[in-house]
Image (cartoon, rainbow, N blue to C red; front, side, top):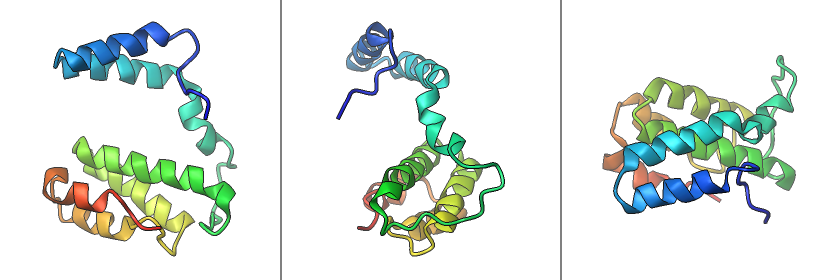
Length: 130
Protein backbone atom coordinates (compact mmCIF):
# COMPACT_ATOMS: atom_id res chain seq x y z
CA UNK A 1 0.00 0.00 0.00
CA UNK A 2 1.18 3.46 -0.74
CA UNK A 3 1.47 5.93 2.09
CA UNK A 4 -1.40 8.34 2.57
CA UNK A 5 0.69 11.26 3.76
CA UNK A 6 -0.44 14.49 2.16
CA UNK A 7 2.22 15.66 -0.25
CA UNK A 8 4.70 18.00 1.39
CA UNK A 9 3.42 17.30 4.90
CA UNK A 10 5.97 14.70 6.04
CA UNK A 11 7.28 17.07 8.71
CA UNK A 12 3.80 17.69 10.08
CA UNK A 13 3.29 13.95 10.51
CA UNK A 14 6.61 13.68 12.33
CA UNK A 15 5.67 16.65 14.50
CA UNK A 16 2.37 14.98 15.38
CA UNK A 17 4.17 11.76 16.29
CA UNK A 18 6.56 13.74 18.48
CA UNK A 19 3.64 15.49 20.18
CA UNK A 20 2.02 12.11 20.90
CA UNK A 21 5.23 10.76 22.35
CA UNK A 22 5.46 13.88 24.54
CA UNK A 23 1.85 13.27 25.64
CA UNK A 24 0.75 16.56 24.06
CA UNK A 25 -2.30 14.98 22.49
CA UNK A 26 -4.11 18.27 21.98
CA UNK A 27 -1.27 19.56 19.81
CA UNK A 28 -1.08 16.28 17.88
CA UNK A 29 -4.83 16.36 17.30
CA UNK A 30 -4.60 19.95 16.04
CA UNK A 31 -1.83 19.06 13.58
CA UNK A 32 -3.61 16.01 12.22
CA UNK A 33 -6.97 17.73 11.96
CA UNK A 34 -5.38 20.48 9.91
CA UNK A 35 -3.82 17.90 7.61
CA UNK A 36 -7.14 16.15 7.10
CA UNK A 37 -9.00 19.33 6.29
CA UNK A 38 -6.39 20.16 3.65
CA UNK A 39 -6.23 16.66 2.16
CA UNK A 40 -9.16 16.12 -0.16
CA UNK A 41 -8.41 12.38 -0.45
CA UNK A 42 -10.41 11.79 2.75
CA UNK A 43 -13.54 12.87 0.83
CA UNK A 44 -12.90 11.19 -2.51
CA UNK A 45 -15.40 8.42 -1.79
CA UNK A 46 -18.21 10.86 -1.10
CA UNK A 47 -17.35 12.97 -4.11
CA UNK A 48 -17.59 9.89 -6.34
CA UNK A 49 -21.36 9.66 -5.89
CA UNK A 50 -23.97 11.94 -7.40
CA UNK A 51 -25.65 14.12 -4.75
CA UNK A 52 -28.94 12.24 -5.16
CA UNK A 53 -27.42 8.72 -4.89
CA UNK A 54 -29.84 6.43 -3.05
CA UNK A 55 -28.42 3.07 -4.06
CA UNK A 56 -26.64 0.37 -2.11
CA UNK A 57 -23.02 -0.73 -2.03
CA UNK A 58 -23.17 -4.46 -1.36
CA UNK A 59 -20.33 -5.86 0.74
CA UNK A 60 -20.14 -8.87 -1.58
CA UNK A 61 -18.53 -6.61 -4.16
CA UNK A 62 -14.94 -6.20 -2.92
CA UNK A 63 -14.59 -2.81 -4.60
CA UNK A 64 -17.19 -1.38 -2.23
CA UNK A 65 -15.44 -2.51 0.92
CA UNK A 66 -12.84 0.26 1.28
CA UNK A 67 -15.53 2.94 1.30
CA UNK A 68 -17.75 0.95 3.66
CA UNK A 69 -14.80 0.41 6.01
CA UNK A 70 -14.05 4.12 5.86
CA UNK A 71 -17.59 4.99 6.91
CA UNK A 72 -17.43 2.43 9.72
CA UNK A 73 -14.16 3.85 11.03
CA UNK A 74 -15.39 7.41 10.70
CA UNK A 75 -18.52 6.58 12.67
CA UNK A 76 -16.42 4.97 15.40
CA UNK A 77 -14.16 8.02 15.56
CA UNK A 78 -17.11 10.38 15.87
CA UNK A 79 -18.55 8.23 18.66
CA UNK A 80 -15.25 8.19 20.49
CA UNK A 81 -15.05 11.97 20.16
CA UNK A 82 -18.54 12.20 21.72
CA UNK A 83 -20.00 13.64 18.52
CA UNK A 84 -22.96 11.30 18.85
CA UNK A 85 -25.41 12.94 16.46
CA UNK A 86 -22.80 13.01 13.70
CA UNK A 87 -21.86 9.39 14.45
CA UNK A 88 -25.50 8.35 14.06
CA UNK A 89 -25.77 10.04 10.67
CA UNK A 90 -22.64 8.28 9.39
CA UNK A 91 -23.55 4.87 10.81
CA UNK A 92 -27.12 5.05 9.54
CA UNK A 93 -25.77 5.94 6.12
CA UNK A 94 -23.50 2.89 6.34
CA UNK A 95 -26.52 0.71 7.10
CA UNK A 96 -28.39 2.23 4.16
CA UNK A 97 -25.52 1.38 1.84
CA UNK A 98 -24.96 -2.09 3.32
CA UNK A 99 -28.26 -3.21 4.87
CA UNK A 100 -26.84 -6.69 5.55
CA UNK A 101 -24.54 -4.97 8.07
CA UNK A 102 -21.32 -6.85 7.49
CA UNK A 103 -19.45 -4.61 9.94
CA UNK A 104 -21.77 -4.70 12.93
CA UNK A 105 -22.98 -1.11 12.62
CA UNK A 106 -26.43 -1.89 14.08
CA UNK A 107 -24.94 -2.72 17.46
CA UNK A 108 -22.94 0.49 17.36
CA UNK A 109 -25.99 2.55 16.40
CA UNK A 110 -27.88 1.00 19.28
CA UNK A 111 -25.12 1.91 21.76
CA UNK A 112 -24.85 5.46 20.40
CA UNK A 113 -28.63 5.93 20.51
CA UNK A 114 -28.53 4.88 24.18
CA UNK A 115 -25.79 7.52 24.61
CA UNK A 116 -23.37 4.91 25.91
CA UNK A 117 -19.84 6.28 26.05
CA UNK A 118 -17.22 4.75 23.78
CA UNK A 119 -15.18 3.66 26.79
CA UNK A 120 -18.05 1.50 28.05
CA UNK A 121 -18.61 -0.67 24.96
CA UNK A 122 -16.77 0.82 21.98
CA UNK A 123 -13.63 -1.30 22.07
CA UNK A 124 -15.61 -4.54 21.94
CA UNK A 125 -17.88 -3.29 19.14
CA UNK A 126 -15.12 -1.70 17.06
CA UNK A 127 -14.08 -4.96 15.44
CA UNK A 128 -17.30 -5.25 13.50
CA UNK A 129 -18.28 -8.28 11.50
CA UNK A 130 -16.78 -10.07 8.50
